Amino acid sequence: MPSKPIMEFDDLPQEVVIDIEQIRGLNPQRLEMEQITGITLLDTEKRQIVGFKDVTDHEFWIAGHMPTFPLMPGVLMIEGAAQLGAFYCTYVDAFPGTDFVALCGAEEIRFRGTVRPGDRLWFVGQVTKRSSRMAAFEFQGMVAGKIVVEVTILGVGMKMEQPST
Image (tube, rainbow, N blue to C red; front, side, top):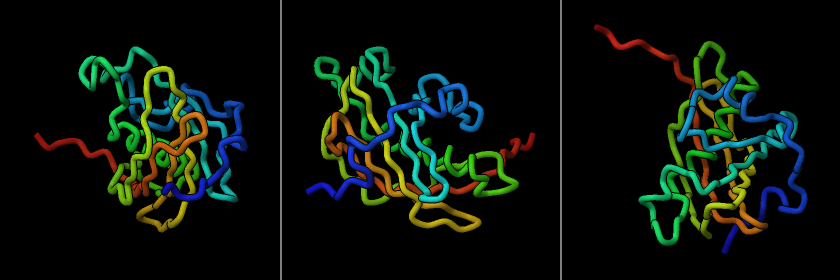
């Protein structure tokens, strides 16, 4: 049985307040690894964020992940939630002196439905814990009002270190 929604589907803000170019200003993922299309809510007081991924028929995984019935891989749903959490943490400067926010854990994962080309996968996130070293988010992913994924995402600030030669 799915959990109670963090935010009711009909209450999700629809107007994009942070577009893909602004997302790219804070998140390092590019090309096939960009799993967030837009953000419609970033509320630092309530510690919530809402964003979405428009799943197109040009996704890199379509040819190999159930070609006759393409399904978005669960790991990419988790990645989308992690990217949205990383954006939030970078936006609020949760980890000063770091270069990016890295996924350090995914817990309590439940897949409850499918995501297919043509779907808009909504992510609703709520910060549940935050320290100077780590942040935890509850995320729910929804398609057409149905929760399709639930996950707790853990993120940490990282420095980009150049490999020694």
